[in-house]
Length: 298
Image (cartoon, rainbow, N blue to C red; front, side):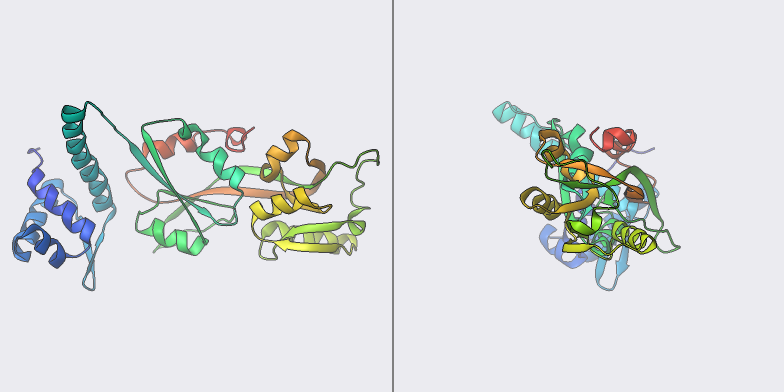
């Protein structure tokens, strides 16, 4: 294979960063035709198409996204070389981009990335949003993985890969009961104020079905989509919260909250969603190899 033409790579990098051939040509002080020719030569050398055109905009292909990652690393290394020789310092970093559904437990997210937090050679880009927003970013490879408590299914247009990385029973959690006897499930459910996930949540649907089957009428103090807020409300009120214990793992450990009991046949599933690609980030492979207990922080 012929040696990589770094001049061509620099032109590709400029176009990828601008997302527009005209602006990149102006910035580089070359004609659009010359710039297009240089990129075609790079694509020919790599044997991959790097851009697709959408209207007037250029979109990176998967190979293009990978090439951009290497290009940024190469040019960053050049800057590091200058810094090393001039100032005696050196920095090499890998980047992993993780999206998480906004309502997902912050503790779960922290447990997931914890093996990388102490590494000086890793930079994490952590984003939150709705599942729809995050899937749009994953589709164009601006995210490497999405953490979600909802499964997605692949289609011809969107070849998602959705794998369950952890599963945890759902519990009733509240403040210590002192000398009172242990919480009696399900008899006491109707007597306590409850904090429940919103009605779109699978946990809530399962809980409502269980109550209906048992003929229970419960008192709902709050419906809460955000697990971080659920954690605070459980900690600071006399309410009983329905949640996976990973959400309140620190409060359970300290004794500020206690687990009253596990709700039968009710679980929270945690998924890692990726898009089908030839080149998976090595850092992500390491995280996904861990056991369920490790992912949950056990």
